[in-house]
Image (spheres, rainbow, N blue to C red):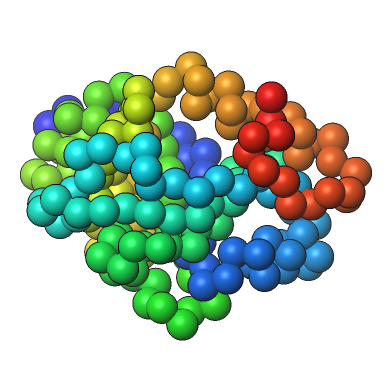
Length: 178
């Protein structure tokens, strides 16, 4: 069985009920920041949840902690992979690790053969992504994102800004990146 190509974990993600409070906790207690905030949902096409058409909306904050990207997600949608493992009312719960892919269709086939279905998947403009329910294997879900130069550039810019962060302006809009 052919394994998907890239399994370097570059991101860990937590689902939160209050994005602003969670960001401040990371900033104040872990010194991680600044966080770049985006609202996601309208740009997603062909959203699937457990094989059926669905909606996927969330507020997301990204920061970098050394080599690892930290993602905080406040779900807006109720039927989604985020709520499969982190129920509403949970202040902060670990949800997934993320890796790049060059062939999401091959990943979907690979994980399906192993019994790990795509809990959520969608198209976001030029990229596709999926959350595979790998909880029996990893204790969390695994997100796979198609590698694209524009996404890589955004993530590299976040890492660059976070590496030289002086502690000021800890919460920013993702529009401030470029």
